[in-house]
Image 1 (cartoon, rainbow, N blue to C red):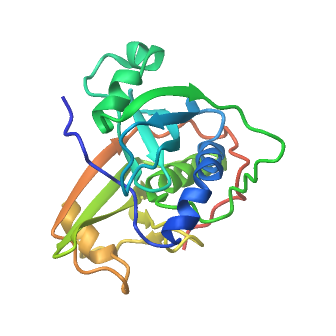
Image 2 (cartoon, rainbow, N blue to C red; image 1 turned 30 degrees about the vertical axis):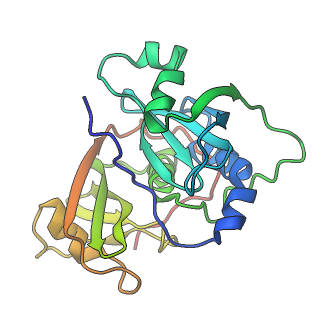
Length: 242
């Protein structure tokens, strides 16, 4: 069973009211970033126990990654939805009970289809979207024919008096070098200096943004299967490497 509550969203950016107003658009934007090659469903959730994180109506994206389901919402970012390994088919058939593990107020959900009036723009910054944007960048790399040796998500956390703050970046290897892509620095992937050790916490402390973040006190890797190269992901233009 996986640790519940491992939130991997990032808390930079938009005002609280703006986030709520754009929850639906953010869910469809996240779906567009992942692309049609990733199973996903935008859902509208009735929440009978609204709070600061989840209003009475929640728009979110349920998606599949590495044999498990995940939940993205604009207010909270991404967290694991599946609770057990080997149950992907069952989870996809009925994830209502899993949603109630996120919040007991998640009474029921319906799948939402996009409307012509929906403002879906993949290039716009995605609220609390570092997890999604890191996956999207990996798909862009392989879609552009870039051969990678290994890829992982690197999630790191800073604990302060205000609680725990987290961020996720993409770590990957190519041609014997290590790189990271940080959605907060979206122009390009950057090399990791050769003198940085291989532990997740060492890489996190070497790559943390220079402003807005203290040094992380915890970091974890999440291994990824590298997609087959050449399956072009059209949401964003060809990526570059510094």
